[in-house]
Amino acid sequence: MFVGGIPIRVNYFIEALMASVVVALVMLGIAFGVIYMDRYGSPIHPALVLMIGAVSFIIGSAFFDSRGADQVRSLIGGGVIALSSTFVIVSIAGSVMYAIYGVNDSPFPYGWETMVSALSVCMVASMIILKFILNQLSALPRSYRG
Image 1 (cartoon, helix red, strand yellow):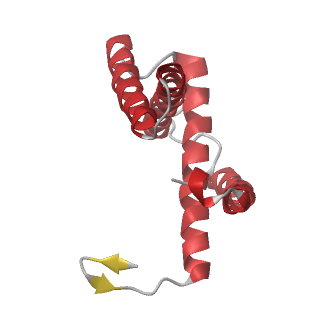
Image 2 (tube, rainbow, N blue to C red; image 1 turned 120 degrees about the horizontal axis):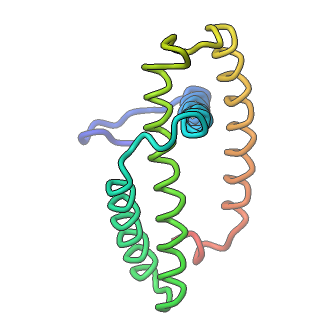
């Protein structure tokens, strides 16, 4: 791996740990964002949600179009990308609001023990998911991997 032209050796264990932590934090962010949206509604104005969806749709459609997908599949892929990325972005924004304001004006009302436990469960789940996805991708022929 090269960073700025400097070769950097990456330890496999550190790489796996960092990937697991990042995916676990995203999973927790989505979970707490859904909790926030259930109690208080969307943390982002609907006009901005539509803008996020539109930009994601255009980027997703262009991505699939550049990969050689026909028009219908490109539009369907763009729609899937738009829905999923909009949901993730709005959920993460909700989790930030949840972290700042919490419930009844107490941030993270569940206590630090519950937060650490939830993070550890999400880390284990994310490692399982990452290993499953990486094994499935390595089984694909090279032509499908891009």
